[in-house]
Image (cartoon, rainbow, N blue to C red; front, side, top):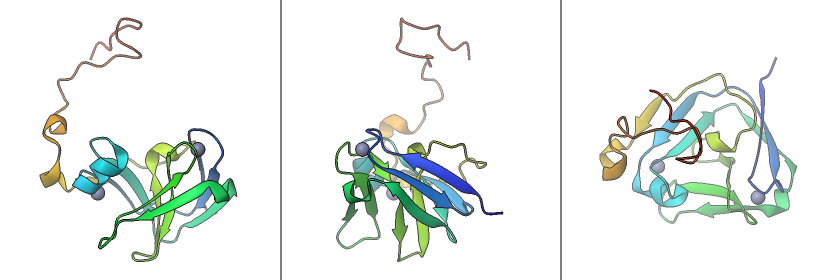
Amino acid sequence: MVNKYYGSCLCGRVSYEVSGDFDAFYLCHCSRCQKDTGSAHAANLFAKAGRLVWLKGEADVTHYQHPGSLHTKSFCQCCGSALPSFSESINCVVVPAGSLDTPIPVTPTAKIFVANCAAWSADLSNVPSFDALPGQAKRDPK
Ligand SMILES: [Zn+2]
Ligand SMILES: [Zn+2]
């Protein structure tokens, strides 16, 4: 039986289905992924034999290929959310983990390009955690 996973963008115009198994799950700290996500790292799943089907909103999916590199990004042109893409160069479906709506049976394989890690994100182990906005919810006792 082929595993199926579903995902969508923030505004809900685009939704997709990915069938297959995930071979790797990388947290990429490279400088391009920092720009691309506006955050510390990208979180991408790779499915070599995966199949990507747009369930709705394909016309709203925009692709960006960074010149002179393998870095690509698909995103919703309405809300800007990251969406999956098929990368021909590595013959792989690449799925931004945060775009998924269904649980996945895997945890990250590795952090990569940590040499480019933003200084502020190198060690987050002592940062306080809150269940919601600070002051509105109980602090995580951990
Ligand atoms: Zn959207
Ligand atoms: Zn990267």
